[in-house]
Structure formats: C-alpha cells, structure tokens
Amino acid sequence: MSIQAIVEIAKAEYKKWSTAPPEDQMLRLDAFRLSLEPHIYNYLQEHYAFEFTSCWQRYTPPKQASNAFVIVERRSHQNLWFILRNIAWAAPHMSVYIFCSDENINYIRALLKEKAEHYNIIQAFTGNPSRTRGKKEVDNLLTNPDTYRQINANYILTAEMDAFFRRKIPDSMFQGTYWGCPWAWKPTEPGGGGVTVRHVPSMIALCARHRPNPTLDLEGDSQDSWLSKHVAAEAVSDPAITYPSLETRANLIMESIPSANPVAVHQFWTFLDNFLTNSDQDTQNLTAFFKNILTFTA
Image (cartoon, rainbow, N blue to C red; front, side):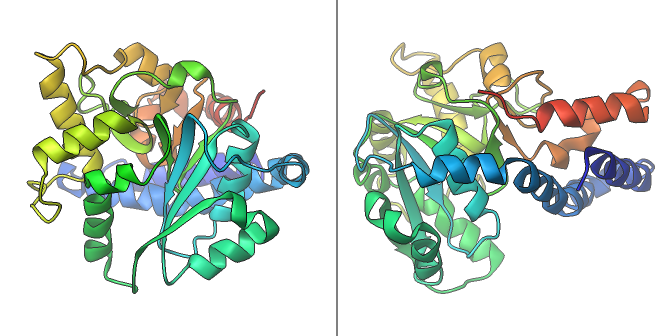
C-alpha cells in the first residue's frame, strides 16, 4: 500500500459524497471510516512492522507505573497486533491494562505469548452482543468508579483500535482531570474520542459523584461525551478540575481538527471533510498531508 493509493481512495470517496445532503452526514462519516481505515493500517504495518517488532522483542512493560495505557476491546480485532507494538514503541515505561471479554481473552494471550504475565488483563465482558448493547457496556465500564479502582496508576491514556501514536509520548500529556481529541463541533469542551488522558483519582471521584449507580442512563451520551460535559461544567467553579487549552489538545491529539505534528491520531480519515477544501484537493497537497500524518518520528 502506498500513500498515493490511499490518496486516490480518499479522493474518490470524497467525490462520491461531495453532493450528499446534510442529513446523510452520519452515513458519510461511516463511509469514510470503513473505506479508509483498512488501508491506513495496511500502510502503517508495511512501513513500521520491522521497527516495532525489533522494539517488541526487547520490550517488557512494567506491571505497575505512574502512567498506564488502557485498552478496552472485546473483539479479536485485527489492529491489536499493531497497536500493542505501537504503544510499546511510544512509551515502554508505561504499564498496560487490557479490559477484554471471554470471547477474545485467549486471542490476546496468544498475541502476547510469554509477555502476557506482564500485562494487566481484566475480563470485563461476556458474550458477543449487538453493536448497540456492546457500546452501552463499554460506556458503562468507563463511567463506573470501580473500573478506575482496578487501575494502579495516577494517569491513564486510553487507546482504541482506530488510533495510533506517531511520536514518543511526552510527560506533558499527563495533565488535567480528563481530556482527549478536541471536537470541531465542541471545541471548548475537553473532548474525547479514541485517545484520552484521564486522572485516575479524579475519575473515581467524578464517576462516583455523577453516576453512583453504574446502571443509570448516560442521558444519551457516550462515555467520553458524558465525561467531557461534566468536566467542562465542574471546571467553571472548581479550580481543581482542569483540562488543557484547545491549542494544546489539538497539537497533542488529532481527530477532527487538523494538526501539523500531533503525538496521537484518532481516525482523522473519518472526518475527511474537515481536512479537504477546494484548494487541498490537489493530489500533491493531499499526498503531502497524508505522508506527514502517517510518518512516525522519535
């Protein structure tokens, strides 16, 4: 897979949806995500598998550390092989927690092999539910204070299967109460998405305060939107509740707001409309954009 091939797929998908009515926006986002994600990860594996595997062979994560990665994944996801090696390269000093299901725990152990004993693997789910129920169970997990009580760390960095880290993770990422990719549609809120930073003691307190019963409805929100809303509201009156500025968040984690050199990236290909303008549709400019975002640096 080449950058040029990815660009042609992106251009074709963009052209296909360029005249779609506004009410088809969610269909458009799903189309961009489904069309481009496999090719993005194909490219990343082709270009970084050797470097990451070399790193992986020397890697043993600490069982406990001040900062931890958290992966919540109940499927035998095809991107997990790459994500595990990516985080090992990006921050080998961080511990790793994997919340999984009875459906994929053996798959995870098979990927980790002899390294499995150095990971915190927690079976949190059972069965293979519908997409709607599965999403609800993940939302419940990440808004339950008991989940965070299982994590022996000060900060966690969540990583979903459609995210990657293109730079080494700086200590400066671990600040504030909760924040993530800034959302173009809610830029003043802490944000969320596939990569988020969460202060564990604050998450225990906040979730216990606003959701003492973990079966309570999230008012139609996803877990990251729910957390973002409550953190933004409490930050107005409580100086202990904080999150970085829009500029800082955008420069560290990129999703729907373009950034020249982000540390982490979460499915920017889903929000292709936000990255394309009439001038940017020139193949040369688009190629440079994709090449930059898909280039990993120390």
